Image (cartoon, one colour):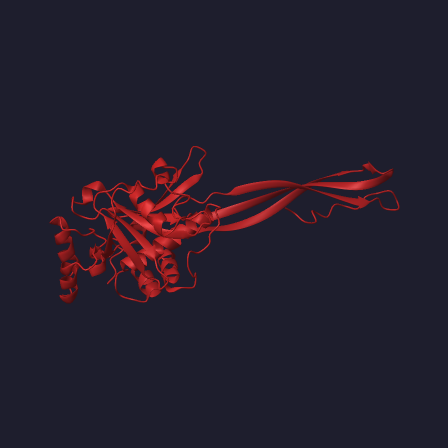
Length: 316
């Protein structure tokens, strides 16, 4: 039974003083997920950072997820480390990772190749790879409560992220059950991999809707892309529906060009776009107006008059 509500997940973005969207994140529960945009708008991976009061000293509080070609994710975690460590680690694996659109793109520490203060631990299900506790949990078909109990007891595990791989949902509370069941084709809650696919897809949507353009970081027809798109389909703020209409006014003059009198039609064209619904970020859709001009020059008729104005030829 689904018990999730995609709308509870908080999608946010930062703006600079000009109002330009500078970076994007998805907040879910005690974690914030930051996509690692390259300069070409593809995504190298995702850094997840836990809120400080949600983890103990021995828990993993920061995790870097890297998408693999088979639509799975590899992950590495840190217990106590500055976030630039995750960015530097990502750049060791991909030199263009977090090149743009991140809170840390201008951090001077990123230029210090020897700055990396703590090497990460490779993780499986939020546990250190080869951890005998994780092996035992798998063999016992342990539930999420057991994993969260370990996290509360200061065991080296990533709270919530680990539990989400033992039956707990990454998306919390009251969902559009029928929508998610139909789109994901399962009665189970979305897995962590599916949630990461959603983060990846919605990040690309942010890139596209803010005018940056979007290039998939993997096959857009792949399973992960489809899962992300499916979850987004259940998001209540699915974007704006727009209708654009145009009107024009014209001024007709008779300039003399190369000793010949012509009929000149100077059009002012106004495009009005009416948007309904809500943006991807659950903001009201706003109408826009754009004005441009077009000049058309035609010969004078034999009787010395000009043809009636019929409208712009090309628009803009």
